[in-house]
Length: 179
Image 1: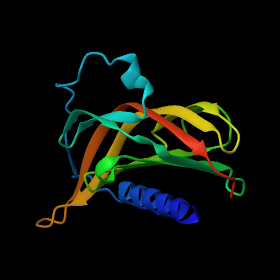
Image 2: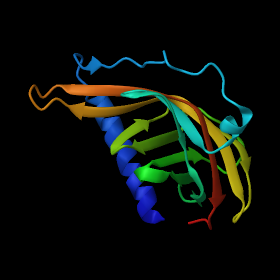
Image 3: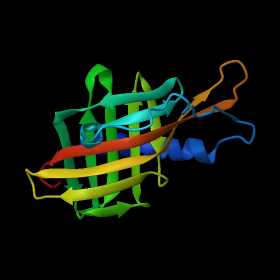
């Protein structure tokens, strides 16, 4: 579990460094919501997963396996780390402060790995913890906002940014023993 916390920390640090080093002339890619469905059923909204727009994903609904989803609280850092896996190598990881239900608008971050591409959202991500239970029980909540993938054009060396909009993100994880 410590390796997972180190992994997400490194991903978040890398994303922050890349964001801070971003050139003025980076080429943003548009987020396409043209094919977005008008509404979702209550069942879709309550299942673990997300809906993603942009970078080739045009309203794609991604479901996540609820059986292997876990979370761990680190008293030393005062943060809860969670991880959810889906089929085909889909991985959603997040971290937020504390052990209570509520909104996290700062001191929280997430990464999504989809189709071999990793997208990061730092303090701009909205994580709402709806339920935070004891060890062995569930932590449930929602997430949304813009996530970004960074790449470098091999011909020009120019840094490129590929934003994706995530909506209807929902997590449900089992709380492991504290670190």
